[in-house]
Amino acid sequence: MYEARFHKQLNSLKESGNYRHFLEVNKSAQHFPKFYYTDAESVTHSAVNWCSNDYLGLSTQEEVIAKLGFVTHRSGTGSSGTRNISGTTLHHHELESTLADWHHKEAALLFNGAYAANVTTLQTLGRNWPEMIFISDERNHASLIEGMRSAGNKKIIFRHNDIDHLESILNSLPIDQPKMVVIESVYSIKGTIAPLKEIAALTKKYNALSYVDEVHAVGLYGENGAGIIEQEGLQYSFDIVNGTLSKAIGVFGGYIAASSVIVDFIRSFGTGFIFTTSLPPAICSAANRSIQYIKENKELRIDFLANVSLLRQALEEAAIPFIPNNSHITGIPIGDATTCKVVASKLLQLQGIYLQPINHPTVPIGEECLRVIITAKHQVKHINYLAHSLKKILAAMDCIPSPALESTAVVS
Ligand SMILES: Cc1ncc(COP(=O)(O)O)c(C=O)c1O
Image 1 (cartoon, rainbow, N blue to C red):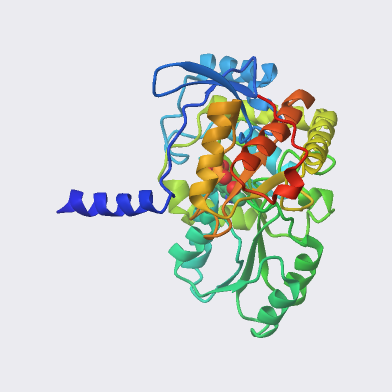
Image 2 (cartoon, helix red, strand yellow):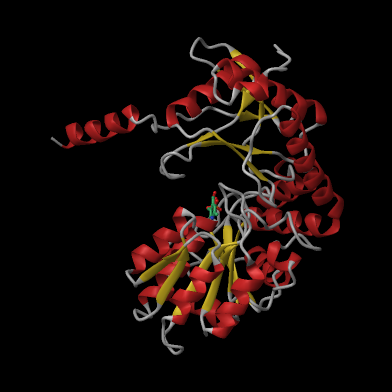
């Protein structure tokens, strides 16, 4: 009975085109963004990765790798304990201190990922303050939604980046009503950037706490790479900042940075923080080295953003529509799960290009897209080949209006 029930649900997922297959992306540190995979006939192919979040290529950076190896040899692989029970080392403290300083906050707290940081922080704040109302952008990431949902507090959703809607909600609540505005700085699928200055002004005016997920911004924006909040000079305007160590920083883990009292509160009451083994010491040390590298090498961010412009220029020249935004995330709207998957698999099999289809539930039905993630390591030849390949495959499938594709040069 149980198995039949699970089969049924899996089958309906398959029928909807939303069943996920994981490609084995055997990364080559030397040749990133190239990788190797083996197909169903056991033939090995090389392809170019266009969906890695290793934005700056730091997961393959020699100094970061060396630090990981060095501390692993000295401290061993895992921490083997929760933070409270033998799982806190100098490396944890040093990294938390770096993160707090980077975000101009009094303190920071490490988690095993930004997902865990989001869920634990929102859940802990909500559960311990049941009157707190969450005011959440409709495009928030699953981890933010899950944190608020599992807290069980009242939640009000505002339209994506709609300041007027947000203000009308805030204005409808008593000034002394505990409330928290929860947003992302760079939205992970559409790549839109939140109007942070306006949101900061509103949270101040209406006496609300503010929580911002900077997962897709840390390492990439701002004078020291601390994110969009740094770029906008708003370090003192948001109460809690969430970030990841697993994307631009190229290592592993997540964190929050906030006032000492908020961090101490989550440290003391957050079950998702307390009851889990802490990050390995070497991971902390490597992440710390990577952040230093980011601070010292601004040109890496400049190269990365220049690559984003080159990519968009190439897509425009190939008449491939993409979702406009001011960030680095480039979404190509497809609008149907099955088509999205077919385009992606043709790109991989015929062109050696790995682009992940983004389907429901990551996006609402009808907003399925191919999300193109460029890194600082992609070269002009990769960009041009991607644009040509997309044009060729989309034209062959009648996926975009043919006038835009009439002059398509077919590249094999
Ligand atoms: C907006 C956002 N927040 C949080 C996360 C979770 O980050 P992590 O991989 O560090 O758990 C992701 C992951 O993709 C994300 O896109």
